[in-house]
Amino acid sequence: MAVNKKDGMNYAPVGKANKVVEDGQFKVAVAALDHGHIYGMCNGLKEAGANIVYVYDKDPKKIEEFREKFPEAQAVDSLDVILEDPEIKMVAAAAIPNLRSALGNKVMRAGKDYFTDKTGFTSLDQLAETKKIYEETGKRYFVYFSERLHVEGAILAGELIKEGRIGKVLQVTGFGPHSLNKESRPDWFFKKEEYGGILADIGSHQIEQFLYYTGNDDAKVISAKVANYNNPDTPELEDYGDATLVGENGATFFYKVHWFSPKGLSTWGDGRTFITGTKGYIEVRKYTNVGEEATGDHVFVVDENGEEHIRANGKVGFPFFGEMILDSLNGTENAMTQEHIFKAQELCLLCQDQAEIIKANL
Image 1 (cartoon, rainbow, N blue to C red):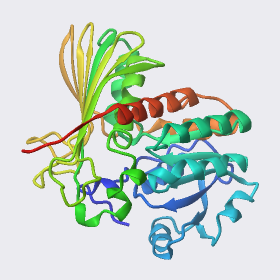
Image 2: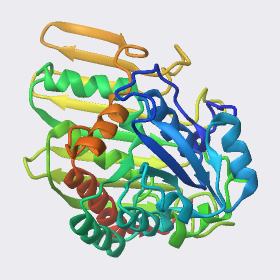
Image 3: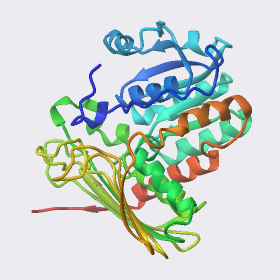
Image 4: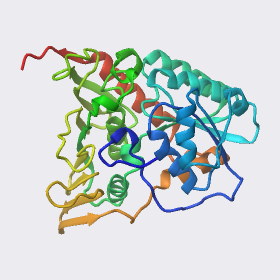
């Protein structure tokens, strides 16, 4: 399956192999190919040493396309084949958003860890149920927050913050624009119950980054709003959303997400993160440097010593996948704690539930 840089739904980053396990030590199955992010998820797992053993989906065409990229995956005609195989350690899936938690619950009850595309939940009730199953089973519910975990510029920004380069982080601003590519979207993309709303869906990336960069375990939603500005033919689609939060340590956050990337942009979305600290600031231009370079992973740092432009591509890799595999095998939480995942998801759902609906008349 070819990667189109202007098609965010099927954007699948490729990194360098950095295997943390021996061949056959970590066997993975794939189920539910409803979103193209599954390709990026599997790239990351394979590069870290996982073996992709099985693939299951109700649509034979999706399986055929997947096996063009991952021919080692054996197609199976039932999810039960995967759940009943004791050698499978993890199931990776990109189901329709409102079905992701139910699938994960089955996987965890079968004694396997689950790795889902974001958003992992479309309701607080789903989140509460999965929390119970996590407590009962001890199995992990990992979420693919790709806008940090699969972007070297975003990873490097986190390292610079840990080094103290910009002092204490006091404010984060996140921009997550996406290309709509309306004609290629599946039906579920336009149904609120199924995709969950823009702040719950692509907003989940943003809130996870805020918690991570500021070191917060919790935050409160100050305000949120959503709108359908330009798609009256699909009234349940929210094509714009923004929200403001304050972390428990006082750091603040504003983020804006929408489906208005112009056709002339070199990529599917000009994703940016601005991080202000007490001694400097960082800007991450994730996917392009507009008007300069049609490449991603640009990190701009201004601190007490001056200004720096770092091209992060190829410098830090994607450590999350290897850390996740080792967490799964060893019962550790080095990649990302379960509480962090659940809190990021809870906050984006609260943003969605509390959002004011803007009735536009532009």
